[in-house]
Length: 197
Image (tube, rainbow, N blue to C red):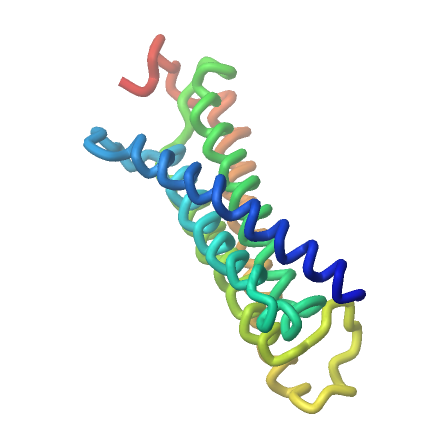
């Protein structure tokens, strides 16, 4: 990639970082002095916040010219992008689904299954994407289908297999989600007018 184009992306990364940092502090401020109940929607919201912050911190490093030259087009970028997009989107969507499910369906979901789904998703996501930072720093490029041609192939293989196990954990957690939603639509308790009081 041309150096001027890299400079543009690094500047854009830093320009994005400032307003996003302000948003994160405002989200945290909404929790301050609140009466937080750790129900499933709040768990997914806090999971979203923590994953988005980790992704944001790794994004600040992308604004550093020296590090960006090292990690550009490696698994570091994959990990950063998935922490911001997957952690910031999917966890937020699950928070919204669990929050609005009683209103949309007229039934309450099983809170225990919601927590099980959260922990499988949260732990699975971290097992999947966090190690990719490490192999990105080691220089493994993206879009590689055979690792045997690299010096540290054994290290890369072990980490990518661990990431695969993490994705399977997330997939297993989705079974709890679908079971919870389908079962609750038919057999869940009738939701009160305001299910969150």
